[in-house]
Image (cartoon, rainbow over all chains, first blue to last red):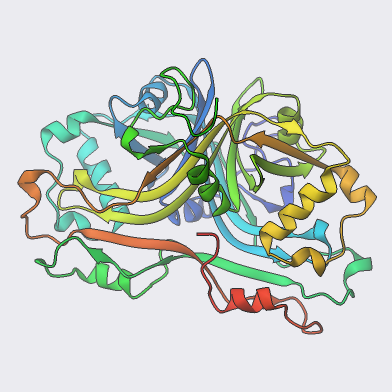
Amino acid sequence: MKPDSPPSANARHRVHRAADRAHYDRDTIHGIVDAAYVCHVSWHDGDNVLCIPTACWRVDDHLYIHGSNGSRMMQSLAGGTQACVAITLLDGLVLAKSAFAHSMNYRSVVIHGQFSTVCAEDKPAVLAGLVEWILPGRTQDVRAADANELLATTVLALPLTEAAAKIRNWGPRDKEADVDLPCWSGVLPMQMQAMPSKALDASCSTPEAVDHWSRGAVIRN
Amino acid sequence: MKPDSPPSANARHRVHRAADRAHYDRDTIHGIVDAAYVCHVSWHDGDNVLCIPTACWRVDDHLYIHGSNGSRMMQSLAGGTQACVAITLLDGLVLAKSAFAHSMNYRSVVIHGQFSTVCAEDKPAVLAGLVEWILPGRTQDVRAADANELLATTVLALPLTEAAAKIRNWGPRDKEADVDLPCWSGVLPMQMQAMPSKALDASCSTPEAVDHWSRGAVIRN
């Protein structure tokens, strides 16, 4: 099934609640993933359900995560355990005239599936994608991972196929009887904002991308 | 067990990776929860692991979530299913001199346990806590939930007992051999920032708390 086809009624990634907020097309899903630095990965380890935040990045039609070979999360997921991954961007608080109609604006993606392990041959390029995700151009400036560092790291890929986006991006929707109440209603928007950077030492010149960040440019939003 | 005691070796909320970032004291855990609007709830519904973002708020030693009675998440969790809830605040990107030492600064809390259903008697006060969480003072201005709205809503409480916080809030830590490489290193901080508010209609005066928001005050961070 193509990710931009609406899923069948029993598909596990079909949105049930507030289905008017659901999107299944690739561009919408990729757009939300591309605005994120972090995802929440959940799986069942045999004893418990776990939900752990971790860095993520996208290359083509896959979401990637990485970690130490010794990580329980990496070991469970590499073993083919079914996983569910969520990415959420909070965009604002929605203030209605009734308490009940208060809401939040957000963009989220929920992905179901099994991770697969990225092979040694592909690992350097996929990990370079993470460094570029953190700051474009960064791979040109830093020491690349050496053989031991690559060996110590597990990189996992999850297809963005069984994925659903959910978006709320509108104002308050009060009941007819409430719309004339004498009470302010509207949206309080919010976004992730870059702050002035802090250099560890002053011996090196500041890359343009870092300067750009420090000017408070909005990033990945 | 008190939440500020370090957990035993086999406790499911014990942090294994990067244990130097772990905190188990109540103040640290509450402080992170109090900086958040959204959590990720994960559970196993019998067929699949699910991970869903939802609004959350704290009253005393419990985390609360709410939803329609018809929500599959509310129904599963109200049935006493084991859940794992994560709250994550991303504070910055850590740029090291080697690709491998790049990292992120963050504050997170992971909570294990079973939700319990808030009784009808307590529901109005707990839900008012959510409206106050969204914007302090807001309950004074809006129409409170009526009997039907209260009846249609399930409110669930999770004790903040089996909880662990994890915090990284320092600069890059490169290997000795890398620290003199001629490459900028440091932290690119980020935070959730309030943006100018958007009123639905211009007929009502703007509350002070909304004005405060629109001046870009940093919120819950």
